[in-house]
Image (tube, rainbow, N blue to C red; front, side):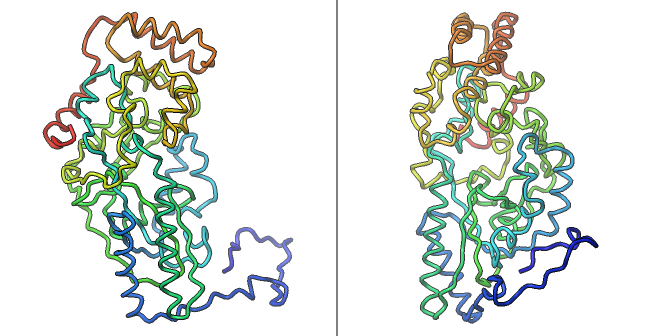
Length: 417
């Protein structure tokens, strides 16, 4: 496969003719797949059975043509909607070209694994501003390694299956948020759901509370049929976003998104967003909580994704008092650990500033100011929180949008309220 583009060649660039003896690319022509269409169809059905055995709720197959998404991706990047996530702009358009990411790829096996924990307590958590809200995907074990290992096992099963047909060159590679790849458009093509106006994948029977993973492979497997878009005229997610991050249907300005602000952003959170963050200290689920499709969402079958005890309806002051060693211990094996102790304190300081006036909060903030575990960035957020606490009178700290989200949860998601 030639990865050169005409745009990189100039009149002063010598054109080199590959030597079939010395150039390994010439001598490594992929072995054609000997499986017949009928055998590939049987394998495709078997892959879905193996997927179920490995804990995946849905398996689908897509081709690698994402060319229609390239201009959309470039426009999103040009507008700076990726914020400080420089990795989104790296590798050019490789993100929309799986065959460049892993040469030889002709199909992508897309997998869904549900993560909604039992007793999610969404409404009760958001209703009490003295509790920290943590996005429900992050309350248990970090999903990256778990899903990647399962996908690797799936690839091994496929490889073993193909050997009985004397095909020994099955080539696959698993990815879980670990490579430049447009996983949601691929999942859409593979029939795992349609793309909602919040940009997440929605399935009519499973909602959006699930992780995605991909297995890039060199087998011409039969393709699955995409699901028809089902949002229709609903704009609940757009109207309920606390920071108006969904700037138009299907387009999220990450720079305004609470998940980006509390997880991806390295430095200070802009003051304009701090009051809107409320008690959300790691991520945000509001656009999913108001989505009517999530009324049918199943609970996870993976106990590793259950919320660990220290993070169930956690008290903000308790979390704020954690030393760095306590933070590392309590978040071991969790996605939360990646933000580090300082950004953890930054986020909680904002939530404390948004909480109802309380002398205990002021005391905790003052005490933290003198800790050797805070730097200038954290200190600035503590100072902001102190100003908020001192200036406000005891009152409801819930914004009108949050109150609307809570009512939506109580009405539409009573099991998870």
